[in-house]
Amino acid sequence: MSVLTVADALPRRRAPLHRPLLYFAAASGVLAVVAMVGMLVDDRLIAGSAAWAKPAKFAMSFLLYSVALAWLISLRPKASRLAWWMATVIVVAGTVEQVIIVGQVVRGLRSHFNTTTDLDRALWVTMGATIVALFLATMVIAAGVARARIGDAAITWSIRLGLVITLVGLGLGQLMVGRESGVDQITGAHTVGAPDGTPGMPLTGWSTTDGDLRIPHFFGMHALQVLPLLAAALVLLAPRVPLLRVPRVRLGLILTASAGYAAVLALLTWQALRGQPLVHPDGATLTAAAAILTGVVGGLLISVAPATNARKVATV
Image (tube, rainbow, N blue to C red):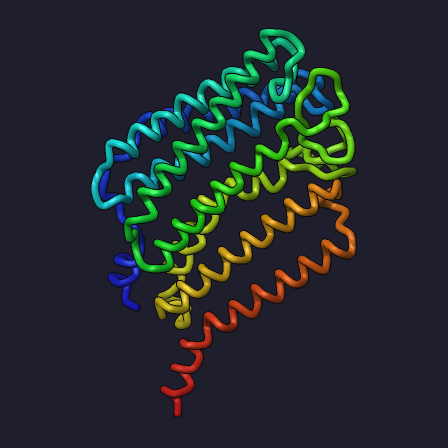
């Protein structure tokens, strides 16, 4: 594969970048910095976590999500007014959600699942509506992007499968809604097996004593960044790694990685729903993880087989 062929395999921007998404990403980045400063100077706790931890995590997640989405929309063969408006819906929904989260932190109250007062209930209902709007808008954008061929087959399928897994990850957030919290007028919970506020991991705050549904939710949402970046890395490594110069090999590796990613997402969901912390897996979880690893290794060997066989024939 020549340098020119590598360049042709990578996706190229064909439509304008969605400016509202980029502005939203920049604002989310600023909010992330402000929230991290807040974590250093504000010692309040909300639901057992640092008061500004949730705004920081949401801001970083929205930053990554909006940049990836703006990039994907620009790769379509031609601009789409529907995609532009759906992306704008995501900006509005994400902005409303972050304003409510920050506002509740300022008040010293939790934002999610809070129905303590009429105002808190109204804010939580509004957040629920923004989450649904964000999911539906992403689904419309995903349907439009999935029909287009973007880059080579490996890049195209990494985007398609990344979008599907991201939608599943977004949908998993609904598992937290309505879950028994153990706290009066709190109509949902992140933690399975105990009220929210159990000891958590550094930075993420994920429970170290019980199951935590935020883990599969987070992992699934970011397939949109992980899988396309992996496909791009395979293309860029192709000039130095002969096996990766074969398009079928790169496609096989991406399909294997996508299947492995989806399997890990299912495992994380199963583990959380059983009330088991990520850092303390039991025998069943380890067995399932070993099975996934075996499947991924098998898929990798099958994927590189065409190039390996071709090299053997060439040397005979």
